[in-house]
Structure formats: structure tokens, C-alpha cells
Image 1 (cartoon, rainbow, N blue to C red):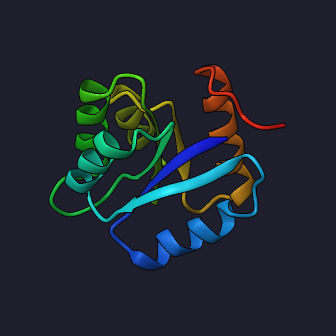
Image 2: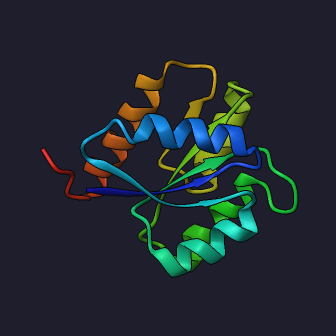
Image 3: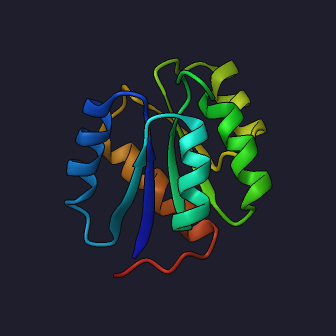
Length: 128
């Protein structure tokens, strides 16, 4: 089972992600945060396998939070979600330590695929 922490400043986005991910037999949402600082605290407490991180948030944005998470909990995998699907945004996310960058404008299958690829690449056992 892939244990996920959802991080987005918009509750409606977190809700949509939670509902969509609940349809997957090998994924479980174990927590939600509305900014990067809260994500860091929850990740320390809950120890998710993968953090789905919004790139743009108040207080601590997703890029700063990714850097902090990868420093504090090196085994955590971060998949960054962003509205700005351009080369610079992707490069910033990957340079911060994200395993993948997924545009919020792409189909949900791209996100599910990115989560599973990250899990496989980092040896997280996913239920068949």
C-alpha cells in the first residue's frame, strides 16, 4: 500500500485528490496539509511514502517544503503538482528533490502513473 500525504492550500483540491486516490486499490491517503510547514510537521509524524505537494502555497511553498522534507526525512518521496507546466517549474521541482512534477492540468492518469513510478523507483511495495 502506498501511503500518501496530500498538500495543497485549497481544500477543494485536496478533497478532489482524496476522492480520486480512494479509487486506487494500492493507495491510501493518510493525511492532509494546507501549507508546506504543516506538511513538514505531518510528514515527521505520519511517515508517508509519498507526499503530493502543491508547488504554489502561502507560508512555505512546495519547493521550499520539498527541500525541507528531503533534508529532514530523506526517504520520503515528493511528487510536485503545479499549475505552471513549464520547463523552469519542472526544473525547480526536480532540483529541490522531487521525484516527479505533474501538471494539475493533465489527466488524472498522469498523476496516478507518476505516483506508481515513484513508488517503484524508490522500492515502495505496492499491492498488486
